[in-house]
Length: 552
Image (tube, rainbow, N blue to C red; front, side, top):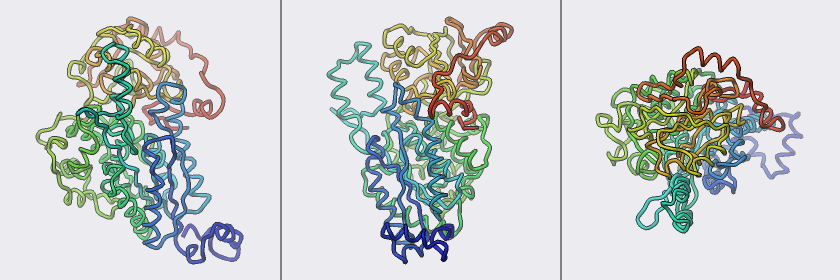
């Protein structure tokens, strides 16, 4: 066992003395040492209860003959960080999560790990770490939040951000807004729609790294605690088998995850995170595979923000397992792949049931014949851009309009709230990419303001930044290369006509090639916004979004 490095032999007597100082017995030190990586903190609703999950995991480990050692992990709440300088730190925190887990696992000589994430960047950061360290590992999330309810209406965080736009548009009073904020987020868990956190927890299940139910069992259910105990027991099984993350996270597993992504209508952030996770697993994923899989995968679910349903509805309808079953019926998944559960993906499909065909559509009657995410290319995004197609109104699938150009999210947001955006406009927000931001800020506030002001079927927004999983409308992000790297988005001028064709996967500025090249030849990079500290280092090392914004 790896833990023998710190527990066995005469030379390790000093190490054992430290363990005994913490109260560990000889019997405990004779068993496999299992790291329980807990992202519990009091700054995120999705993480406030993870101490309960961790205790259940440790119970499961002890039941099955292991010794758990709990270690912490940081976590940033994207909702709280939204629309201020804190958002610069959200995506970069993913790398800190991965690096810190690598440090703790290697330094403490864990034999295996159970990882407990829930919210946006913590899930992919932990998956990256698991692939990098490559010791047996099982994931169990904290589960989704229940949707809010008030006066017969269902509420969620998306509606809160959109309500701010409605207040500024004069269609909602401040008193109504304040009443909403008391009920939109009713308790612990990852925000209730198919936003980034729940997307990634569902995809963890599809990858084979989480147990059935990981993505959908509500946070407040006793079943979530039972799942955590089972995760603690299962990690001992995968340790005995020697089954490691890279054995599970193969190219076929990532293809399964992308297929699930399209069927569920997941957050566009998944297209940022899956390549980064794959990179750590030694698997190459480029954006072209996204459209290939999307073209053959029907969109079976419309959860908020794309539709009226929430995670609790998906859970009651049959969960990720039900969607696996439906996709398997048309041979859209690799079914012989192993999982930490012990069953193959095909065996999980065989055992699954579907209880609500409104939430999980039959594969022969989908919401659309193609998947929920599309990659666009053109002279404005030679290396690709990403849009949540399932959340775009039919009126905006093909659109042309004049560019309204802003060099920061803040400037664009002010223009939207002050009524300076008109129908047909294409809002261009640049220098907000991984390098330019730095940190590739998530822009729920401007997109929600557009929706709240009733412009989501008339105006588009594109950026080298990214969007929340809660974003809806013709919001096109991840434009690559980013402006700070000299991408064409850097030379768009006010009034240039932008052409968007989502069905054909095209994104162009209507300029002659000679004019485009002339502008690019004159462009010079602006001074970096931040040069010191972690963000300064991050900006110097990070790549554009098409690579997953990995560090080089």
